[in-house]
Image (cartoon, rainbow, N blue to C red; front, top):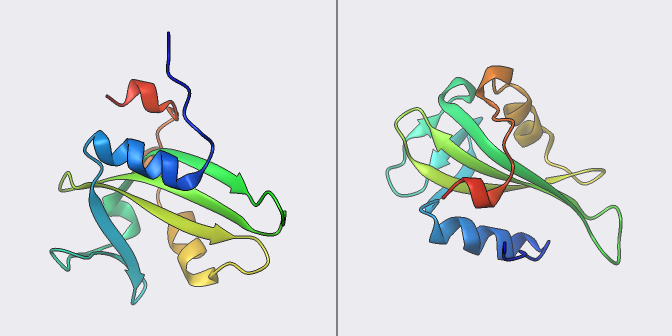
Length: 113
């Protein structure tokens, strides 16, 4: 029997971290930066393994997407992006520029292990 995972962003992040997705990324200077190595990834170096969309329970405008990422040099991590009326447009544009073929059709965390 599959164990159900809560639909909270932090629950998913913790589950992915347990499965090796531990790299921390931040958006800086138009790139996705590995906070440990300081390598600045371009959109074509990012592969989206899975993504999860969320709406705030108390405020539907409080929306986010959790991206599960593998990089071209095989770093694994997650990135939480806010979207909707308060979204950071430059970050959203970065993810929009990731080539379509770099997006996996799989979003089942159970199949990532």
